[in-house]
Amino acid sequence: MKSGVRGVSAPVLMAFNSKQCEFFYATQKYRHTAFFGGIRSGKTVAAAIRGIDIALQCPGSRGVVIRETHVKLNDNTKFEFMKYLNEYDKRLHIIDRKNDNENFVLLTNGSWIFFRHAHDEGLFKGPTYTWFLVDQAEEIDEEIAKLVCDRLSDPRYHNVGMWVGNTDRGHNWCYRWFKKDILDGDGNVTGYGEKPNSYLIETTFLDNIAYLQQIESSYVIEQLRRPQEEQDIYIYGSWDNPSGLILSLSDIHYVNDFKVPEGWYKYISCDPPFTTGTFAALGWSVDYDDNYFYMREYYQDNRLIREHAEAVKLLWHCKENLMFFDPSAWKHGQGDDTQVDIKLADLYRQHGLYPVPAENAIGVGIELLRDKARIDPEHKHPFTGKVGAPHVYFVKSRVPNLLEEMAGWMMDDPSKEPVHQCDNIRYSVASRAAHPIKQVHDETRRLYTGYMGM
Image (cartoon, rainbow, N blue to C red; front, side, top):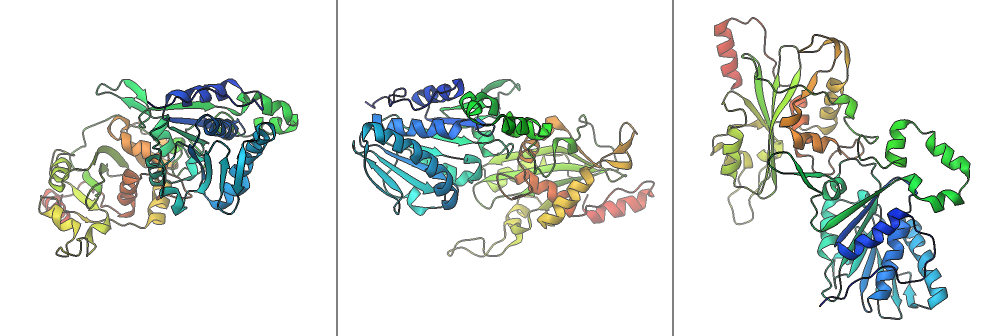
């Protein structure tokens, strides 16, 4: 039977606030405990002390402290962690030996504490861990986070994964794992976060009373004088509308679902995987006045090409559309060494989809999208007729995955995080889709749309 990890048993070095106490208790019950929120809110301190406490309670355990880069690890996270570990050692003489070159500490009870950056191959090799602490978790890639989770496997003890970070990356993988609403078929919230057996504590700059009492009041006043948008993120820990988003909340405009009028063109952009992975398709339409409407989506994992193809055919419930695919679908050599050289696009053609390559210039697509999403002071709203309107609109209820991805789509790394539908919306504007033409003779329209494959 696994030994339980109890509450904080080591000598108390500081007064803990209510959020830090909630974090300690959560680590006793859950496999993964996340602590996110405003700056200087005591998140890393709490996780460091909890890691030390687990190492003391669980003889022979193995824990690891992780940060995204070697420099950040040594200059910040390890420095803070060792400050508290050395304080414990002064009182209890718990350190047997430490090696700064190999980045480990061995305690007198046989417990090991390692320090690793996220790209260290040693992190994913050798024995597994009893506990880990990922500091500034939002900085690392989701795939690395998954690998870290795989290393949490010590059958002797309750295993504890601790994730600490800020919310300035918006709806990234941290948000999806620990914060995102989980809905049932009727749209009711049934839980939070995609990560099983996890718990999220959210905190603010103002929750850390002990810190606020130690620093100069001028620093607190300076933080509270930030623009409201910055306060929401860095003081209060909001996940929404972080600075650096490709499209901010003010750039996203909604319309109710509607039937596409006859004469408008219907398009589908697709981001297909070659084997396993997420297939994302985005259905959109363009009107006579250069307005783009994002109205339908398909978003599924790990299905056969035939199944994806059949689902995409039904996206608009008609065949009158032009389809753009990620241009990598036309690359040669997508089979292994024993297979015939084949293109992914060819496989979809066998199942009735006839795509053309999308324009995949990332910078161009983003610039065009941002320009169309901004308010054009001379442009009329397509439904209200009000002057001063954007050229991009979303049917909110129909494209939830697109909106979720865009909430974490950042300018500094537009390819990071799942951006399948974000790629598709780039394709839509960068590929310069043809617009319908008003008052075209019926025969001309028939020939024109036939040529376009509509």
